Length: 138
Image (cartoon, rainbow, N blue to C red):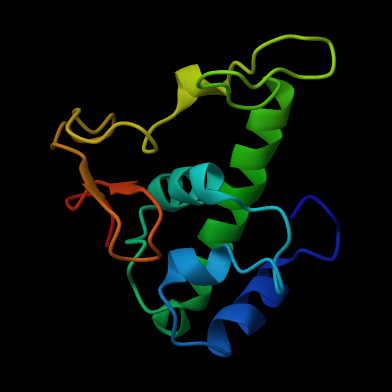
């Protein structure tokens, strides 16, 4: 997603070709390489998009917003050496600092940093941990 070929138009094409949940489509490594579970949760929260929403129903404006969110989240995570929960270390042996900036992932039951509503967790979308704010993400 940090390559120039990852454009909002490319993302729109991926989403138009599927009826999968937007989170599942975003994490499809055959079509978009590099967006893992943590960063998909974060980008969807940042864009205010429900991870379970059918990807093909997103408007062009919402796709553009999600595209910007994916790029921003990944750049911020890289700048902070990734996300460390337990053992992860970068090549210099340092823990990743992005864990302190997480707005969605790992925050189930905590207040949403945008509206204060309780963050909800589910495994229903793709079998992976998904955390969202049902008030902010639609």
